[in-house]
Image (cartoon, rainbow, N blue to C red; front, side, top):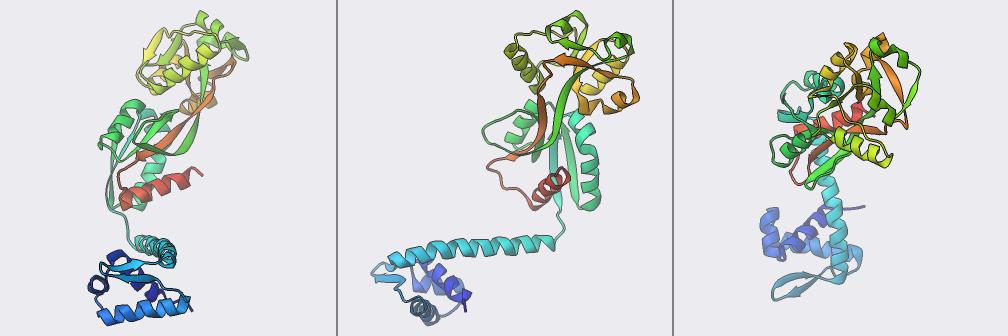
Length: 296
């Protein structure tokens, strides 16, 4: 039968390089440490250490056993920590960064549910464009970010796509003659167009897509957020280019309808990210797991 204590003693001696130092760290006598090493050597049938003037030096067999024992003990420590966390309610502060639209249309219900389940965690919502949100994550102003994709940045770890985004052209009753029609990208220039402001991931993605398809669209009206665009399009200000997920209610009610485009715009998504080299708190890890589960 496996005697885990023998491996723990062996592991400590290997790290300390000395029986005396290992006995101090383990709070047991030096003879007891020496006897444990001897028992493990007899059990395995190999010499684990070479005794030198400098102390205890791992033999080739000892190095092999140490590598495996180190991995096993780390796994046990992780398991113990995970069990301890399940017995403890998370607490502290989580600073969440996203655009207003991502908060409103994709995260509000999830954040509210998390807050009800873990009332000891304080949530701070920081609204900004996706590029600025990424910068806030990198400089430590927020703990977790939800940003429009595609996006990448050094020092940022993108975890999951939490929701797809399907960009479409939509119009209100004033343009009802376009219902059921599909327009080429360039022919959309004949109509007033509404788009989100230029310094956004959406505009960059759209520009690249249009160029790849030999098309060019310039907005007649630029707006700072999607909710304002929806209202203006409903009022007949023009054709808006907006994620379907952000105007679902208006499409369902008939206030808006989709104007077909050929080719259709590519799908995007909203991703969750954390700082790559910053340790995540227990509360943040629980939040990330909660969001990942919510969007499975």
